[in-house]
Image (cartoon, rainbow, N blue to C red; front, side, top):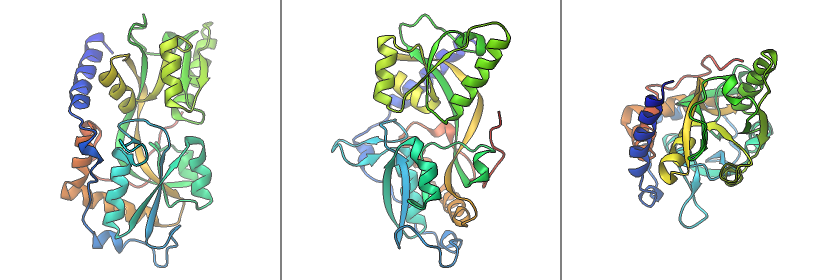
Length: 296
């Protein structure tokens, strides 16, 4: 992508980030009880806690998706907001469970929570074990220190020999390893994956030069670049992904979640959430159940 388009992306994101009022966003947005969605809950469905929708969200501070409020205790962000809309629509209380990325698959399988919302993208492999109801479209992005000589990442050759931060088991790791294979076949040095789970550590690695590139969700990368000016987005991943609520395969809850999301979209509640977190450009017009996932 041309450098001018990167500038356009950053200007657009800067406007969104500057328009985010974190203090105002600590006030919860509630949704309307939706009888049609409630009717889609399977008969005798066993919630983790009766009368409560238990939702796993990111334990990391990764705005605008999830972060701590000013009380350093309450979780806010677009994912908690959408989780609240779902609970309200289904006539349930909401319980948020801060969860590490590595823990959500076992947590869903073991029944520790009803839904996982940890910026989980739909993939064909994940669809074998989980059901998905989409609620956002997201890209992956490459970001670097603002003073880095790296101006653009278009493909494997641009990461040859670079130290790249990724999360273990993520789509970005799969892309990076695939690009490493291409680099090796072409006689180029592969990138060196740097596995981190803490966003603060990632920031430290980038600013100290211990890593060259951060590869993660575009919404998070652009938010940080616009808010602090210490990083810049220099490329997007090769594929866009549907981000979705994630539930145990075959338990039937996905139908109710889709209905709740569609109702929130129709009433404009969903759009208010994305708008106040600067994610309006990632909205879906309807939720899809188990759409075609990313393949590698």
